[in-house]
Amino acid sequence: MACYQKSNMLAAAIITCSGELVLTYLSPTASSVWSVSHHTERLDMNLDRDYGFCSLVFTDSRVLAMDRRGNLLIMELVMS
Image (cartoon, rainbow, N blue to C red; front, side, top):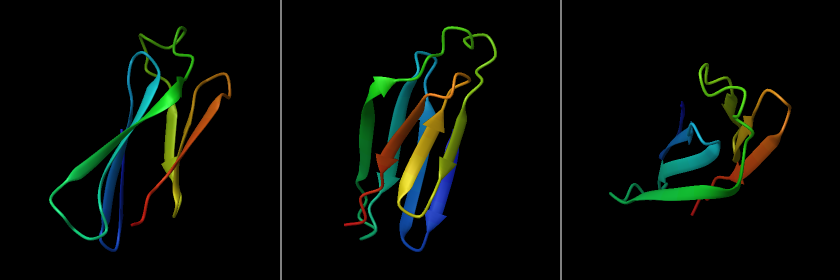
C-alpha cells in the first residue's frame, strides 16, 4: 500500500494478492466521499503470492504499479 497527500488530495493505492490495482482518494473539494477505482488489468503475482513483491509510486497526477516482470499499470488521479 502507498499513500499520497498533496494540498487537499489524500489518496491510497493497494495491490491485492490477485494483482488488482485499487486506488481510493478523497476528492480535492474535501467532501466526505472516498472514490474507489479498480484497474481493469492485473499484475502478474503468480510468483509473488508468498512474498508480495510489487512496487507502487505516486506522481503529481498518476499512480504507477509494477510487478517483478516489469508489467506496468498506470491510473490517473482525478483532480476535480
